[in-house]
Structures are given as C-alpha cells and as structure tokens.
Length: 157
Image 1 (cartoon, rainbow, N blue to C red):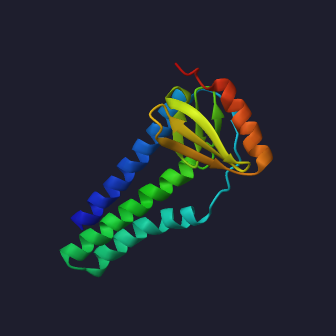
Image 2: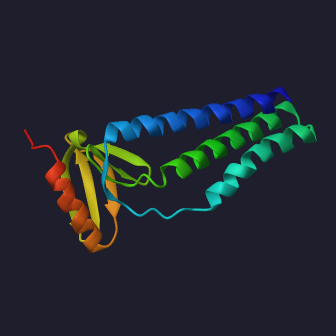
C-alpha cells in the first residue's frame, strides 16, 4: 500500500511541476504572434485516467513488491507523459521570444540558421550547427512560418 501511495504522490508532484513549467515558459516566451493548430488527441485523457487505476489495481491485487514497484513506476510515467502532452498540445506557435512545436521549445536567441530542405519542412539549427527543431506542414504554412521567423532571428555575428 505504501508503494501505491508514493506513486500517487509522484503523480501529483509531476502534475504540479509541469503546470509550473508551463506557466514560467509562457512568461518567458511572451505573447503568441502566430498560432499553430494542434490536433487534440483523446487517447491522452484515457491514459491519464487509466494510469492511477493501474497503480491502485496492482496494490489491491496483492502482487509481490518487485511487480508492484514496476507497475507503479509504469503508472507514474504514463501519467506524467500524458499530462505533459495534454498541457502542451495547445501551446504550438510563434511567440515574441521563441517558437513552440510539438511540445519542443526553442528561443530565438539560440537559433543560428533556418534551412528549408524542401517546400514542406523547415529545420532550425543552433549556432553550433546542432539541429534544434524540425517543423513540417503545407508549403503555405512553412512559407508563413519561415517569413515570420526570419524577421525574428538575431543577426549572425
């Protein structure tokens, strides 16, 4: 029973930390200037609801300690990942200080170059030529995103 209680505490702590992270990230990014349409995935709600039941069900069945710990860790990971994805699904867009795409955040000051390998994708590289982010979509969408980002990118030194 102690393992399932600690797993529920980890779930609560993860939810609080990701909510705080989202709040501080939105403050750092500034106002949204160009929103991206994110498709809401309903399976995350099912995972979010089923993961605590997984932990409680394993403790009620009276499994051995290694099995109980494994199932509890799995339940905590499922809960935290689905909660993170639900929180970040609506954040996609170009902001005053950065870009958010599929729950990945990149500040403009860390972007070195913007490369368009084809009309339907855009790749952001850091100043040390490390790939930061790949944005894909229709050619009109990528045209609008790259035009907006080229205005925002800091000049190369």
